[in-house]
Image 1 (cartoon, rainbow, N blue to C red):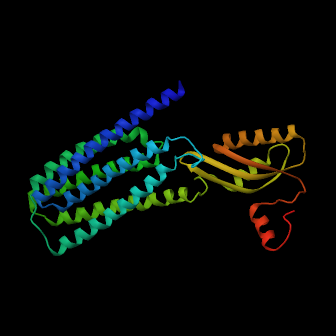
Image 2 (cartoon, one colour; image 1 turned 120 degrees about the horizontal axis):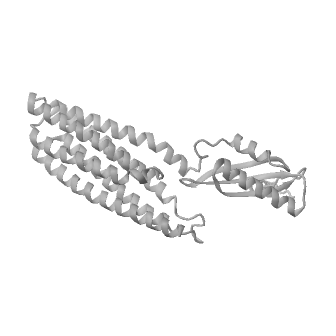
Image 3 (cartoon, rainbow, N blue to C red; image 1 turned 120 degrees about the vertical axis):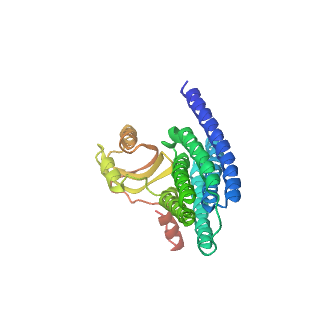
Amino acid sequence: MGHEHNHNTETIGDKRLIAAIGVNATLTLAQIVGGILSGSLSLIADALHNLSDAASLVIALIARKIGRRPPDAFKTFGYRRSETIAALINLVTLIIVGLYLIYEAMGRLFAPQPIEGWTVVVVAGIALIVDIATAILTYTMSKDSMNIKAAFLHNVSDALASVGVVIAGTLILLYGWYWTDTVLTLMIAGYVLWQGFSLLPKTIHLLMEGAPEGISIADVVSIMERTNGVESVHHVHIWEIAEHTTALEAHVVIKKVSLPDIERVKTELKRALYEQFKVIHSTLEIELDGSVCIDARQINSNRNNGKSPT
């Protein structure tokens, strides 16, 4: 029943993403046409931002489908990290778009062009409605997914940008302040770059198998060493296989050597790791107190020096 519920939830999520892609793609086309007809660079800038949103949603949808594939002999941990790779692609693309907008805006400073204010206001008003609708479609899913959260934030920023474009178009109609279009373009580009660079470190950290946010190795070792029968813990590695999927490996030194004691210690450690740090996958190597810890690097070093690994 739980699996069926999860499948239905994922299906609903996919349908929401497809709907969001459709409205964003349509909006992008309308904004580009409106920007060309009106001569508004800020409207084209907002269109490019919307296009990056639509592309990010497409990538997120594909990544979600790939990520559901079960582990196999080729990918023993499964395919869930595909969503993190998709997030990296989306963020890099977003940064490129932001830099391009700055380039175009600087060109307009030296070669101003006439702008049709009413076209800007009408198209940007439609864009605002679509952006709000898309944000509503992706809000629920954004709570548990880095990809969808990025897409949701993109739509929120698009909505804010659309508000700004309406304001710029109004100022052009009322006062003929054409420079507001260029200034707004620079503001949109700045926001896009800030958004991209703020999310990029977290994505790279996950791909580099860094420790999950909020988890300290010292705290993990401290909790593990409180377990009855554990003398010490070393060679600790903790990382995220995928978003919300934490893994750990460690060497655990114990005193007692009976099989029941070893199994008890392992069970208690795995329970503590899950309850305290939500570690789903843990690999624990049990060592006896006083024994010499041997790992692959030491064996390789000894082999290169002509020594026996024992």
